Image (cartoon, rainbow, N blue to C red; front, side, top):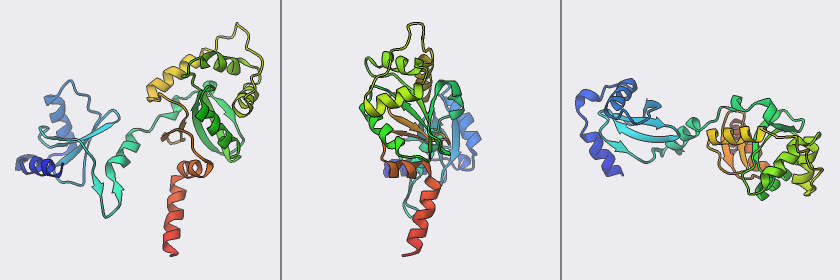
Length: 243
């Protein structure tokens, strides 16, 4: 990969080394009109540009001829620059989650969105963790992906006290009364469409208020650290400074 990068960069005409990201984006769209290009940005490597296509990142020279598929590491800074950018472009727009499609529980000030399937074992494990974190306000989006979970999700959603029905099932395995046949729970179809739009294909999926996504269940300490990355970083710096 390093050899390829060297050869690609050494082949750049001097006339394009001063091109801007906008110049490169225009060139890419002209050369590859059927390829979706969302953004083009400069990188710390002269003559190499980052191209975001959906939730993927590739690197290209200013001519748009040479492409590199891989990662850029800042070794002295101990940072994976590509991973940082992938996190940024993968953030979800939580404003698309409507209030009428969430099941809200908890009285805390820290919000977390959870796509959860009532037939998912890992979701039940996560629910136990969430129940023990009083600082959280959990906004659950019922996502019936498992075989047979649609009827279960419908019964929970259509119950007059859906929060109680959800907790009874997820924490104790107790299924409350079946929902009336007249309840269609169209919200479940909306939830499935939203998950597809977000690229969520499994549960549990956690979404932070700033749109970061974490797949799978987490224990309380890891979840707290994930929800508060800035606070975790400050604590780490303070710890290192005290050594």
